[in-house]
Image 1 (cartoon, rainbow, N blue to C red):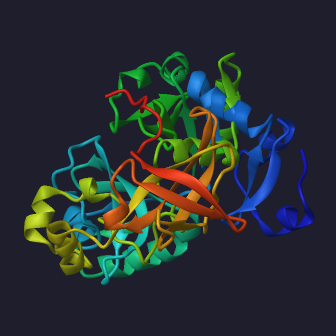
Image 2: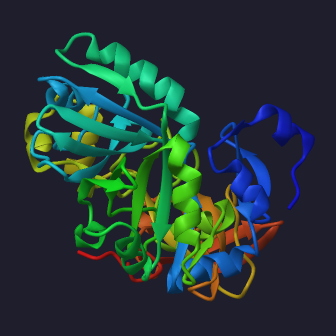
Image 3: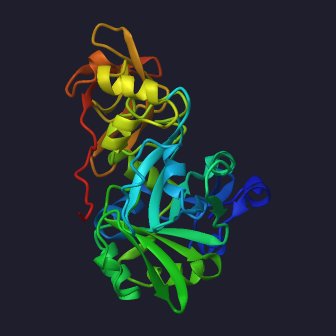
Length: 373
């Protein structure tokens, strides 16, 4: 374990901080929080999630509730997803869009009850998100309540269901993107079958005071090990999942980002969300660029910022995420290319340290998802 002085003094600590240190976590400052980048090694932790079950501390994420009779209508004024059609205990991925159609942040929305929605936003954006959403709700009959006392754990992998069922009976009965309230030693939990790895798994919202005890109970199972930010990144990259601030941002629309599937049919017909004209225009006519997968030849990875060139040497885009895919067994990347070069199989060159690496546009995700539908 190593922790620099800046991390010790400047970063906030999650309720699992002491447990990370005890488990040998190498701590770094991430989005203002001291979090483990790895324990035993990124590849080992990546394979733990793919083959067994890995436990991630995601308590830095922002958790809040929108409560009131107009909660659905209010949120639909800010996102392009169909929130009104979300049933109790169901969750949906969406984006906060800006007036230009760009993405302010991406988030998960869960209907806890008829007039209560839970949202989970990215750590680096949560202060701005909550201020923005709170101000927007002033025009509606509902309020935003930040759940500052809740920690968040993610248990991911093919054995996650069996592990969680043994600790919390009934949890394995959840379907993909379903959530429900549970009890653990008298404490209320909110558990969803969801995650950010491409594997089956769960996210568990737990009171901060019990987060470490729950983590220790899960880690006591032979098939569970802690995993850090490094494995979380390689897992989500293989799964073709966007990282905010890298693959999506305020200059990227959901259509360009290949997230059009998240825009509800009714919302496409009715509109009523920021950037609707730009987004609907791209749905109709196609965007000028698209997010694609990239498979470099050889073993050298292409990192964020690498220029993407066509076969004749013309610049056609940029890499937004890239690295080694342990499950794939080679380098993988994502990036944006001009629409005419977005077809799977299209040959391209990735400029890495002044050299042109041969690559091809690839379908996303790079691995078969392990979600339990």
